[in-house]
Image (cartoon, rainbow, N blue to C red; front, side, top):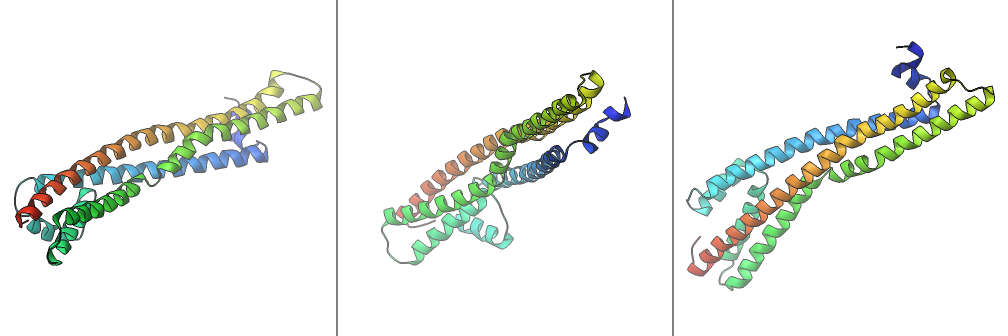
Length: 226
């Protein structure tokens, strides 16, 4: 490959605006991959923790014992905080003396719902950034391309001649901006769609667990035992 047509040479000799655009796209790609790796770890860890806790939850035993075990561990993600919030509210209702079971159940539901929303917000963190990078990067790259091609044609006009040797470098540097835009956008879009489906799946799992636990607590309140 001709050294003057190498990617590094074209980037180094591109116009200042195109270089700035390329730098922004490289930064967007780095940020995108950082979010992808961190979000993948978080979702994997959360799903694993939720599945393990559900196994313990449905293995039998007293909810109070399970709560004490969770409280001692001082960790947990996904379903664990939802369970803890619900059971803590259940205990408060029990310690508050005589209270209408319907009101107590509604209070437990509210507390679990608030915690569930917080957990979902934690999982959704960074998805908006991926969506923004995925939707805007191609247009940013296209802007760099348009600017580079415009400069190439201005150069041709000033030289008053048109040849492949004159046109090729300017158009090549312009197309690099488009390639960088796609390189930043494609992984971000794929990751956003994948993570969105994962979050929706976990949200369904949280909601199902909450409804099942509310049923258990309701029976406990009406029978007078946990």
